[in-house]
Length: 345
Image (cartoon, rainbow, N blue to C red; front, side, top):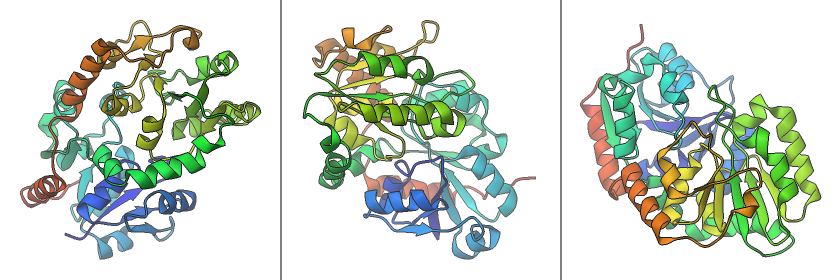
């Protein structure tokens, strides 16, 4: 198998880099800034920069027969280009409670191999009539968390140096990680971020991790927040920081909406608080506390046993039993051998 993982400007490598390490394949990046970022964060893998002019039919066909991709629409374009000449393995970029992705899945993506984290993702695919159209699924478990634990010292030291040492005081840090503004208006960023900054007590640090698509679709608001946060010694806003687990390990509590980061938090059993809409309940609701206009009146760093149990149970549903890299790799190779290349008419 001559394989590689590929990513572009709007799909951070946090989901593909651990897969590259597990499969011993390179990560190809077409964005120069993201390439430099990945070299710094993921020295454990081979990272290749390929500019957009070179990244095409001849380059891919000459060098590879299998691609791991996280971008849905990009896969469709490549599939049209390579008509049955390439294996496409879809790697989910997170596990969120947004239904947007299911409503807009291109049917051309449903003919090859999909990686899934665990029972919950399989169930969602089935409920949205997608599972029956996929040739093969491979359950991976939480391979991203395992990768973080394997290289924890590297990732924690990097996060300390680049993020947490920049706060004026070493005090409890709350992570606010809003998602982007999709067709369901899932984000809390536009309505709550500014007021949250103004209401933050001095005894907390606030780390705002922005979704990369906020910059694309709400650039004015995003850049305003990035500049505005520079006035506060206990607030930082991150736009391009790929690794989430070292941040979650260091923060004392999570505040979010419908981002997939909510499921990443479950591995740490930390207090969770949600800016969810009243008419959009999610499985994560039982794992934490809904909050109002001023979240800091509610947020505490003390975790109750009831929420710990709910988080543990949802984590098991989302990611299933632990799987070894050897077993996952073996299942992926078996899936490739027992299915046919993606055909696009």
